[in-house]
Amino acid sequence: MDPAPPGSHLTRITTPWTIVRRAHGGAGDGAAGALRLLLQRYCGAAYRYLRGALRDEDAALDLLQEFVLRFLRGDFRRADPGSGRFRDYLKAALVHLVADYHRGQRARPRPLPADVDERAVAPDDGAADQAAFLHSWREELINRTWAALAEARPTHHVVLVFHVENPELPSAGAAEQLSARLGKPFTAAHVRVTLQRAREKFAELLLDEVAHSLGACTQAELVQELHALRMWKLCAPALDRRKGRSAG
Image 1 (cartoon, rainbow, N blue to C red):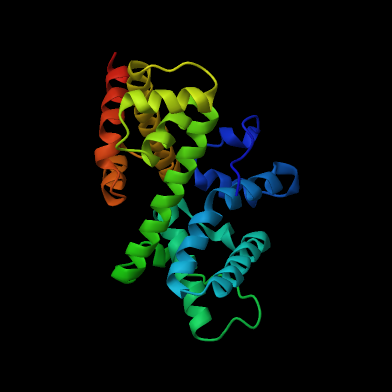
Image 2: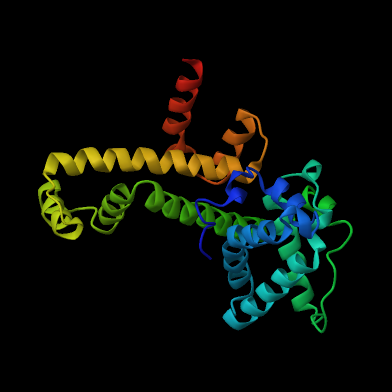
């Protein structure tokens, strides 16, 4: 799904937990918009996880519809930030959906179990489930970062995508092709500088996405999440720059 419009007041809600509370706060409190934003942000990760867990695209789409129905019905109003990270809560809900599917109990919608918040912080639900969900979550954060880069720095987005698609192409050759693609002159030196700035901006935006997914968190918790998602190496320089600006 597409990211929320840049001008939306909901983009100023900075954590998934506050969006959950707004989504279930009643029609007069922007509930519909908050609910839409939740689905925009997390349906991609949910679908990738379901498709990998079931290895059946049709079944994954069916369960995704059930997942959306439970959102719309308000089953996530029980979500509690005191019970762990939002992604842990979301994983527990999806694991439960898959378990229901395998037990053949999808005849009619069922509410999320009352103890799903406890499951979110319970011991290991299975290494395979954990690895699969982390992979889908990581992809969702990266995809959202690409979209954010395209919105914030369109030229940087084009140059970085071009480099990812053509990693071995020398700067001079890249400059020639990018000049044609962007309709403005590029030199080899310009390509190198723009690529460096694009990488830095991508890392900063990715750091923002990870921090947003955690909500209110300490720097130690942010670092721990970056390691868990295998994003530390990419984001560490951006985090250092951010700490330097704060210190200054």
